Length: 464
Image 1 (cartoon, rainbow, N blue to C red):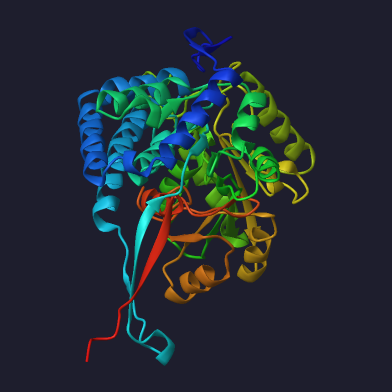
Image 2: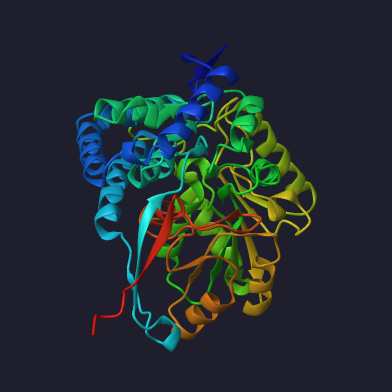
């Protein structure tokens, strides 16, 4: 069987990719298990470093081609696709750095009489075969964040990309092989969902890395074989608290990027913005003026800022949610309509009811909701009310308010005077509640994919 990859902008077919059946996956899992069990056959750290460095060099040489591939299969505007390609290269470099910085540590043993005369230290070993399933929205860098740490940690890995965007994954796996990684250590495994579930839940899988929807991620977690470790990265409905009197132009510019980057198809995209009620009208007016200036269209055009949604069905869904919010009492400030079967206009809605889907669920589209508040603690309470928590933000010139929001907002990270979608690839990145499990970021993922093993030496007493 094959899957046809379409350009999300004009839906034209751009490639065919053969799907892998269970017989092949079964063979690869056996192979991965045998590779891990043969400790004498493990790739030495210096070999892994050399392979990753060569891979990064190859990627630098092909950076523009990789960016164009992201545009074609994922619909990300060219300016942002170039940034993603650059980040992916840096992420490979970070894997090398993490290997250089990582390692074990000495554990004091003579803190009590029981430990006296002993020496203990730890070191890291690969956890075993890794199975990774990735999302479409960052088709190269997400793959690097799952595969790169596995290779660096010394784990054989099978990677299933989103079937809408398999080409960047295929390119990265091929680059690793070209850089000297034996094929058996990293397998490109595009397959149907039924095959993917068997692969994930197989007892030979020691670690499962998932980036995608909460519904699928939590379902797969419930079916894992005993002992399989896991990392889940889902989405949320990121909240932003805007304090009174903040210089508005900088806030608007930041929210514009955080809410409409990749047309809102980001797991920590700005979605819910809380503004002092006295400033709400002017704030919404300024946000509308800025949103209406965004260039929406062909992502291959260097001027485009907002491209297509990944599937036409997503345009239909966003349209339904927006219409529902407006019918329920939300005020449409700008946008609110499809521009084509693949494009949706950047949209701002004021005070949609809390019961509307757009206030309760991740929109994953180019929509920002703005709510007025009179009491900042009630705004924070509303921001925290959902069963999702990932990254949040506060804009304030007052240290007391910024600190109050840092302490009070639910989430693994709170950005101060920056949008919720900010990320660098070495920082911890973690969804809480239904938004995920475990901590992402290159060094953190590498730690997850390895075991800290301890040796305790009981030295014989010195001869008298």
